Image (tube, rainbow, N blue to C red):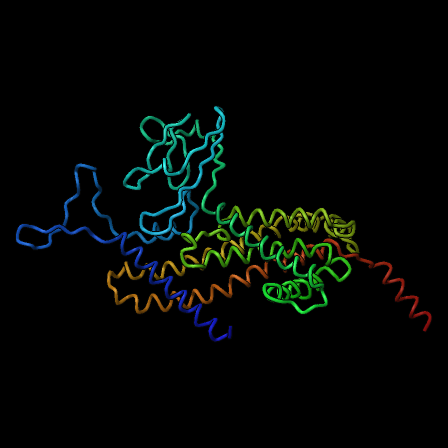
Length: 387
């Protein structure tokens, strides 16, 4: 497929996404209309039978957060959702039930009576009292181990990752590394070589790069796949895995562990007792260098989380302009800009995976690098004496 056709397909996909998303929001925001005896449309009064609430103004913040946060069900469109399993651990043991039990027939949060009374409060599963209010004392013993939307999406991305990489590995095993790649193998090989030649070897060194290459490739493809899945229109519901701070923190913790377990004596010496410095400066630099050991993974965590979340918020904000101005003409501006930002998000999805992997390789290279200050100095003096 030519590059121009791929670009056209991507533009059409994001245009369809913007239209479907705006239509979905519009369906939820439409006002019900009643007709009087003369056939004149009148504003429908709130139903007292079900205690319906008066219609509220369109809330941009609530709408955006609704689409980027995690949830116990996987919303597809309208009132159609995939109900995910809820797993809770309390002092009374484990409980398993469907998230459907946490919603009533009007798709509003409801109380589920199990070992305790459970209810979704601001998207979080909580134990509530008889009045439906959060029981803070009881919630101290609650462990929510549920399969949420982000967890389910992570399973999907891991499945895709295994299928793609294992298929490519099987092709190499069958045809050998000297044969020309075919099919999926031909698509994956340039990316793998790019990570090896442009990320691992320059930052870690040719001798040690092979040891850490599987780890770096796993990080790169896991972030890349989750970034792309978060951009696919209505995959189902568009799970925002890379925009979840728990996901980015987990990746950063693994990088922190690998870096510090691989660190050699020279690395720790440069942190706690900087060579070539006066002892007073060594005492001054030691706490600064030690803080840097922890700020590096924190920067990895926040950078990925902030960039992916900001992109989603920007696209959703543009679409919400249609409902802020309450006119379809606003879509003439909002939809093209949303498509443009969506195209940029494709580039950001790759860049963030690349930057995270490159910085992880840099930290590993710094931790495993051998410093020979004294030996190099003596060698230079010997060469000068010889000449």
